[in-house]
Length: 453
Figure (tube, rainbow, N blue to C red):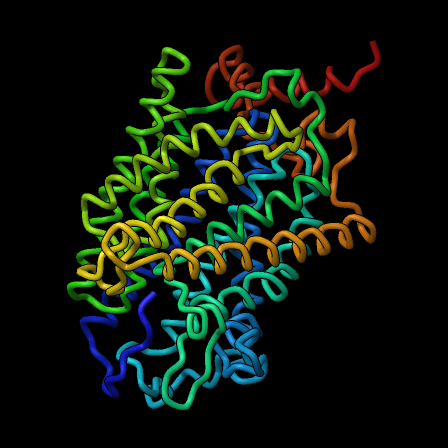
């Protein structure tokens, strides 16, 4: 992500673009809900969607109250955390004068960054699909925002500027992460892995078929994610200029190449190119380009996306070999894809791109690769350990996993008293026709279901 501009006057064009980009990132939340919702079994689709919408609600509140200040407040020392009091409640950002050295209103920047946190938190839920208590998830993601995401965002996204000290990875180490390969992708993947280990495997994992129940929803969700990802990446330019145009291009190219790479591996390995593979490969390419979108040429983005598609398609099988149950492949796609994109900067970055960094293959030596490796390892380790601790505490205090019987019956009906597909009502309508006759028939059927047999 580019740092806030040194100019003192607000730029209406840049502000308009960041407003639009923020809306695109917000769209990624319902897009992810559809993507994840289609991938689970029909008995838990609403719960899966609710975990995304629940994360959207609670993270937004926590971010306004204290999250933004922890991530982008003046550093408290050593580049580890921002001052939690400086922007608490965001009331200090209401006047135009509060923008300081930025060309966009800081309150808009705060919202844009908060939506990054929303997407990251929602991604974590895919690792524990089908078996988590909704209330426990809400508590977890609220605490996770404060203890995991906000500190990592400070390390990675908070640049030093006159009168303001930022995070250690971006300013002292020299990590390049344009839009969140570490703070979003590696962080969500490592957090998801920790939670999957805390909750344990689903009943029937590795034995019973657990295929996606609605691939149409998966494809629709993937399309919305791709659309929103342009706001995620190109919006991180914080302006409507050449940098945003380059990033838009590399994001488009990498997504397409990722889909083709995944499909190619499927065709060779399994003999079939699937719709689930096309959607998953698209996301894998977008994950890998997230940190590197401002550092590559279009051909570099093509290579990055294709490699990510192939590597992630292979990596999703690790859960069966190693025995952990990552329900929707958050580890295989987001953790592995984030590593591919973050480390790839050290190899194929070109100084002609907006970040101005040369990788090893462009004559930049191994220095940048080492910095990328250190940043990726630090975020992975921190997110995994702290997320695991939070998960254990939540599990011990209120119980994180639903009852075995409820897991078998289906979370939607037990937890939310709803079902995604009301087939009984449809059958009643067919037998009774339209209007009151159909309604009375359904009521009669419901009464008979309660009678002793």
